[in-house]
Image 1 (cartoon, helix red, strand yellow):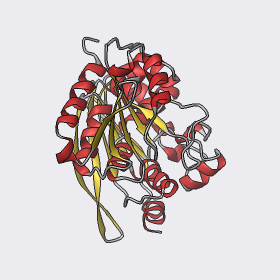
Image 2 (spheres, one colour):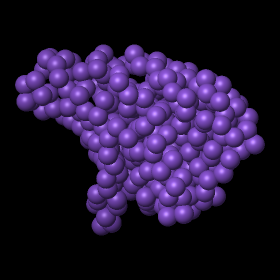
Image 3 (tube, one colour):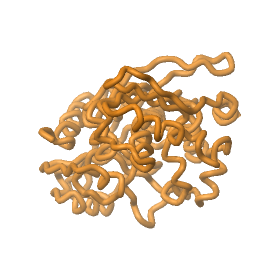
Length: 319
C-alpha cells in the first residue's frame, strides 16, 4: 500500500478545523495537546459536518453523496458511499472496532472507528487485512454522548505509537445529525467483514457502493442507536464489484445478508438488549446489511440476495 490512511485523514481533519465555524463544529485541545473536534456532542454539527466526518473515517478513499428513500409517504435522505480499496478503507479504517474497556456513557459503550485502528491493530477487524499504517499523526473517531478526556487520549495515542499532541479525536453522539450520518455510512464496511467470515477473499473486492436511509435524528442515544442500526440491517444495500470466478460468488451470496441469519426479522433493539446494550457483546450475525449485490467484472454477471424490510424501518423510525 503506497498511502497512509492517517496521513489522508489528518489532512481532512485539518480542513475541518479550518472550516469549523462554517461546519458548526467546536475544536479544542486537551491538556496533553490532543485535538478534539466536537461534531455532534455539544456542537450542533449538521449535514456537511456529517459528510466530512465520514470522509475522515474512510481516509478520503471514496466519496459521500445523498439521495432519497421513500418510506410511508415520506422522502427520507439516504447516505451513499463510494469506496475504493475497500479492504483497507473499511476493515483497516472505517470499521467501528475500537473498544474503550469499562467505559460507558448513558449505559452505552462508546464506539471507536477510523484510521487510527490501522496503526494500533488492536481489533480483529483491523488484523483481518495485511496492512499496517505508519504515520506521525493519527485520527480516531468516537461515537458517544460525552467528549473524550486526557485518559482516553493518552491511551489512544499510546496504542497508536504517536505523541498525544499528534492525535486527533473526532466525536459525535449517535443522536446528532453528523453522528447518525457517519453510522449509516458504514454500509460497505460490514459487508467486507461478512464476506470474509463466510469464506470470500476481501482482496478480490475491487470497489464498493453502499446506500442506507438516514433515519429521523433523535437525541435519545438508545433510540438513536436503534434507528441507525435498523437502517443498516433492514434498509441498506451494499454493491460490491469483484474480480473472481463466478463459483466463488455463488458459494457465498446467499449467506451474506441478514436474511440468512436466524436473527432476521428481530428488531435491532431486541438484539441490542440481549447483548446488554453493548455492541461488542451482541450476536456477531449483525455485522452485515440487508441486501447484497455482487457484480463480477471478470464475467459481467450480477448476483443478489437479501431484502429490504420497510415495515421494520417504519416501526423504528416513526414510533
